[in-house]
Every structure is written in structure tokens, then in C-alpha cells.
Image (cartoon, rainbow, N blue to C red; front, top):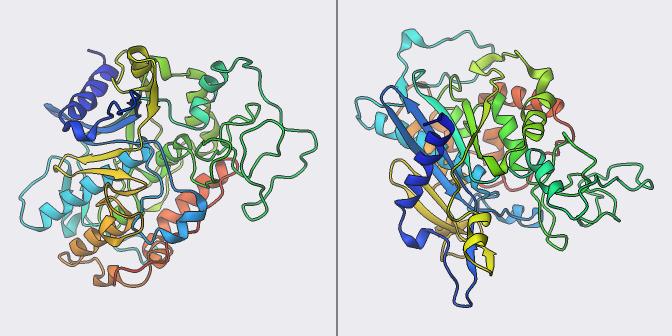
Length: 415
């Protein structure tokens, strides 16, 4: 079996073990639901395991971010939710090791003689590192939204020719002055285009949506995955506990029907060429992945559902699962059945949930400041502990065209 098929099969089989309430349904009106799926697979000596997976296809509009309060997940497209689930899995591994577990297939406890104190910043030295013998792979049932899927979107149009930007447009609006986002050919491009303006390739895009949907500044899955080639798969919080070394994707696996070689090469390689060979402080290095394909199709993909049923609809339910047995249904960015910004609705993979878990682990470790839970989430991310990571992100954003930072939703506290 080819590696691409092996990776896909591992994720698909794990998804099939989920209970039926976590899967797309047939509605009372006869509509058959579909949803994208993504998963992270760890491949080591003698084993291959799916350690995180997710379904989902929505995100919060920009107008709602200030209300999120660390409770609502901002972006629950399957790819991004799977990456959050992976980071939750990493934190759960750290928790087990700090609570007495002797070993892990994935993390290695660093001893004092292995800690490198050469860093010129005040960033604490992470007590854990990834097992070099274990490689990481990502499966996506759909081409990631954004640049990696533009050729597929163009090919699906009645007229596949590029859409030119209107000649009257001379400047790109800022987020503050941009008009309401509409994916139509007769309006100026927003600061972050969605699916519109096919003539513009190799640029940062926002999450796509209907033309009448509220605008969002959430970057596309293509852009976020491309960024991970430099920042590693770790989030800011997880990188305080685990070194980013070796936590990079070895491969991204897509169904053959969802793979455009031209788009993937442009999105993940050519537009990132200025970063080739870059190594930063703190264990960060530009680590490109290879794109592989599989002939297997997810049974709840839009294509497979449409093949079986005449009437289809996108599912509102997202699902998050980790290899430690955490399993959640998510609607509107919060736990299914909870009000959107109610503290009780916070997913374990939300900012609030992950921060609380990371702070608890830090309290059991030497060398990690016990004040990890103090201040606001934004203050933590902008503090000296994450200086090295911010430098990497700044370099990558400079290399990628049009990145607009999302600054809302981080003013909450744990205390």
C-alpha cells in the first residue's frame, strides 16, 4: 500500500469508530449531510496511529471575535480543528508525563544536560521534545480552502477563465475601510479575498463564504498549513512546553480528485521559496512537506454524498477527537447544545481550554514560570516567552503576500 493510501486509511478507520451522533446525518426533510474530514497521523517504528482528527467547515465572522472570550473556537474548518486537536493531544501527553507516566511514544522528557541555554531571549526552555523516530502526516478529504484549491474552483465554473480585478480598483482596502465582502466580479477586492478574483494566485486569502455572509479575517486553510512549515504544528501555548524541533509535517495527503499539482506547488513551495533553508533560534526551521495522493474517498465527502443522494446539504456539526479519547461535538465554535459564548460551552481545544490545561501542567514543572496563567491571553502571546516564535511568524508573513493579522478575541483572562 502506498504511503498516501496508508495515511488516509488510518484516519478514515478512526473516524468510522466514532459513534453515529458524531457523523453527518440524513435530515427529516430528506437532505443528506456532507462534511470535510482531516486528521494527523503519527508513524513510528512498528506503528502508525491517527492521534487527532476533526470534521467541520465554518468559522466565526470578524464581528463576533471580540465576544468569543476564549470560549468559542474561531476557526473550525476540519484542517484547523484537527491541528488544534493535535495540540490538545500534545498537552495531554505532557500531562500524563508530569503525573507519573514513565514514557511516551511521542514525547521525550528533556534532562538538564540536554537543555540548551544558548538562547539570547528570556524564553524558558521547554521540558519536552518530540521523538525524532516518529514522523507526522496530515490527511485532508478536501483540497484546503485558499490558494491550494483555486485551480479546482476555476475548473468547476461554467467559465474557467480568470476573473480580473476591476480596472477601477487602485488600492487594496484596509480591514477598517474595506467594503462588505462579496465574492462577485463587479465589486472591489476585499483586503483578504475569498474565492473571488481567480487572476490573483499565490496570495493570502480569507475563509470563503457566500457573498451575503458576514466578513471574516480568518486566513484560509492553505495559508495556515503553509505557515506551519516554519512555525511547526505547535500553537503558541504548546510551544512553551514542547520544543518545535521535529514537529513538522512530513507529508500532506489529498484525494486524487482534490489534488492540483500546480496549485499545491505554488501554495506550499514556490511562494515560500525565499524561506528555503532558513533556520531560526529556538528549534525553528523551514521544513517543507511533500504532497501525496490517495485513491480513497471519505464516505461523507460532498462528492460521495452527492453520488448517493439527490439532495445534499453541508453539516453544521463539527467533531474533534484526540488519541487520548477526548471526543466533542461542536456547533458555532462551542460544545454542541451550549450557548455560543457561555463559559460552560468552551471546548477543550478552545483557547481557554488549552490555556487552562497548559497552566496546570506548568505548575508541576521546574523551569516554567508559575505565572503562566496570569494576565490576558494577548499578553501571554506578546510576552518575552514567545519572542522567538513571533520572529519566525513575522518572517513568514513577509514572504506571503497580503497577510492581515487578526487582533480580536484575545483580551480574556483565566483568573
